[in-house]
Image (cartoon, rainbow, N blue to C red):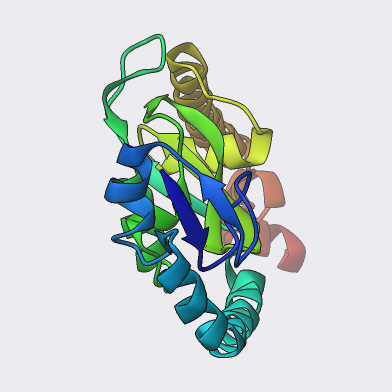
Length: 215
């Protein structure tokens, strides 16, 4: 099927180009999303009369997308999921999940703007492309972890925190606390007490001593 592109489509063409696409792609995506119209002599004439307005609208949307890109480019969103020892998720992270996470960060994104070839099914840091405009795309990182603490560790180290590493980290924290408590107890036991009152016999004090001086 031949269509007239109403905006730039990556790997397909520029606005105004007449391109041949699969019928399903045209009917299910290009035409309902108003990204293209069927190629015909009448539609070509309509397009030419609307070209100036279409180009002006496209420029405005691109400027808005570029302004928004400064807020989202490089953004990292945390998604907490259950997973097995190997890091395999009990489920998956989809484009819908990512769009929701980005919205929670204060940026309004639609699911169709998330360019995700397949759902994420492993723990870790996953780069994801977000298409803000046909000519503006940004990179977002999906930090998929079992907990907020694990997500923080992944962000700091740049790699997946395995179950063994997580247990080792937790044990290290416990051991550090125990060592700190033992150190405080040792310090307290070694601290000398205040001087004791001198014994009367040692100082010569008392009634007998007074008699010796006056006798």
